[in-house]
Length: 169
Image (cartoon, rainbow, N blue to C red; front, side):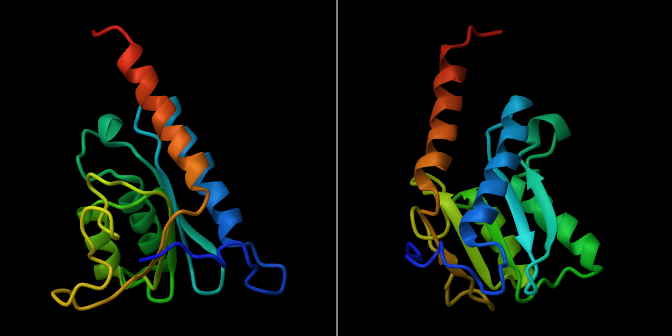
């Protein structure tokens, strides 16, 4: 787990960069925000650079504690590729994944994780836990944090400031 200083470099051939994909994840996070959900967005990009799954937080709307952005993006990718194994894929997400989401990435054999803001309370890619290279798990995920961290963090911070300021129902 580290900040990827090369996150802005192009994969070559005019393919989108990590920054481009993270900007898309931020757009997806705004869908969650508009629905009153914690603004987290995620996408899965196949080894050949195709976006094969997208999601944003929906636990409130779905009445589902597992409806995190990453889980929904992984489910969509699995459906698109007709496989739960997503080897070679990269997950882009605006917030460091929780243990549940990181474990799902391990089971899906995600090769790479790129995230924006760090989550010191629940982050499982090095902040509170590090499940990316755990000897207890059968797969390692290369993780790179801090990509557009200021933008991702500001979106979350602003959401919670507004939520705390809102009158209770």
